[in-house]
Length: 205
Image (cartoon, rainbow, N blue to C red):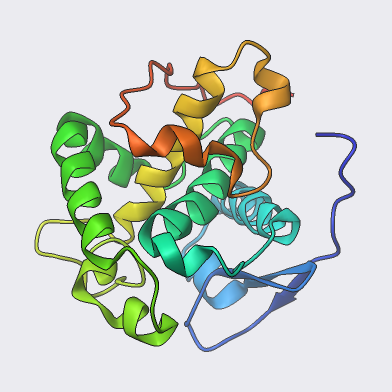
């Protein structure tokens, strides 16, 4: 997406709260998370590229629009999943490959569970109540407290697969690459099993 300018980036030492976030139009990367003791230079480069790509997408997105609480679980899935999908295109590597390996064999059942939780909290309401809901916490904001046997933040993976399916079904795939969280929403209302090949470790551009 050469037409989009890359933002400046802030690299900080934080309190181990987050490896990356987007503050307005600037990504913020926490070194205490992305570069723990024992990290090799190659691991550091790979991690930083992934975080920078993911958080850069967030600076392009619309943020929390008034419509998002009406379908909060899906909205959060698209916000994070689109960022992970574009990070995959940039780096050639799927974020959190251990989560991907866990999720793919049970994709159909995960989609069904996501749809049930989505419908249960759909319709809007207080954002703090929605975020605190067990149905939301099953998928997001649960690192260190994910359901037993589940990886952290499985909702990112669900959203990434929705974005993949959206692009795979488009006749003009470059034009379809979603930079904003709302664009692939129409395909999210149906179960999808996108036929996307796993990318190699080489950078595609």
